[in-house]
Amino acid sequence: MCFDTFGTVFDVNEYADGQRWHESGAMLIGADTIKHAHSVTYDYTWEHGTRRSHQFDLTYNFAKDSASMTFTPLVHFQMVGLGYLSPDWGHGNWKGESATGGERFTVPVTNPMAMTHLHTQTLSKVVCTLSNGEVHEGIGVLETLVLGAHEPSGFTGMDDGYTG
Image (cartoon, rainbow, N blue to C red):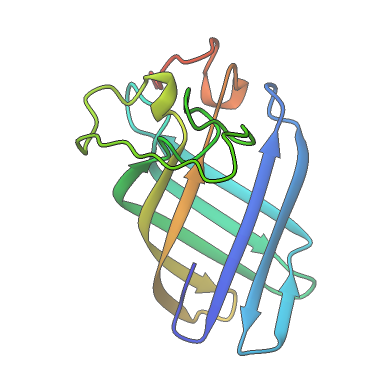
């Protein structure tokens, strides 16, 4: 996420029961100062019937302070043809030395629960509140890919949407 005087990045990966197997979060301040979060917590609301973010709240806990961010989605971008779920251009598939191709689709997509549309990047307005009370507005991209069951979200199947 990009703010006026700093940037942030994070990654969280979980098993179906919500148990984490990886998390990281960091804040880049200026050109050469990196603060690594000791822990990353989040809360979210999915768009009804989908696995796309409706609202996402993220907190970095550092040694002596914290940063809390609220993401408000502006545009959802399906990662079709760019990797993981494309039947023709799947992540890591070798197509030859000079293979090229492309796809076109209308946004917003008519079926966000189609398997090829589950992987999204959501351009978001992000408001960051530091533990000292400073508030910063910025912009960022929230990438989501939830395949299969995810107990905390209420997902039980491979591609069921949010019903909460």
